Length: 213
Image (spheres, rainbow, N blue to C red):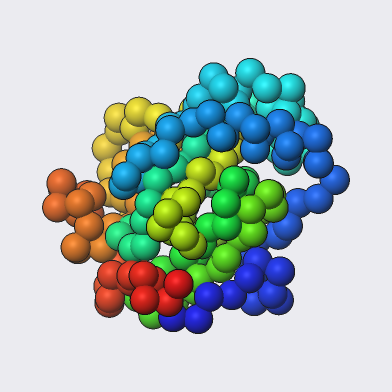
């Protein structure tokens, strides 16, 4: 699988590089270094180490226009796709090491709420580079570039995203895919999420980029 850089023009439909927040980025990177590095993949929506940084105000102001935000992390080791998710808002990522995002576009989801994994593109994010992943971009856990180093990646989202799912009857075609607050999930049939009962949303190969690193 070809791995693009987020500095390549191919990334423009999926997100953008955020500049001008050097002091905040440095604070967050220092905080991220204090977070765990699981053997597999771990995710925490909000971490006090990050949330209490002055940088959290900077992210709220400059990335979310003053909206309440949560600063958490997704850390570990991974080379597989497994799922894609999307939110109604952008997500901001920043890593202590280079990492790779597997991305698709919401418009590529079919009328049956299935997305072919052949649509997915891979993008390498250099360490220390803050990126915005647009609300219309499907994404999931990062992939590592170096199995020895793994990844520690900031996940900045609107407050309460990825927390307990609200309870209501399914009415729209998207409702069965809502697995947490502000989180619509499209799992691959081979994923643990699908095996645990999440409604399948991906067709095609469950991509693994281990051979492309």
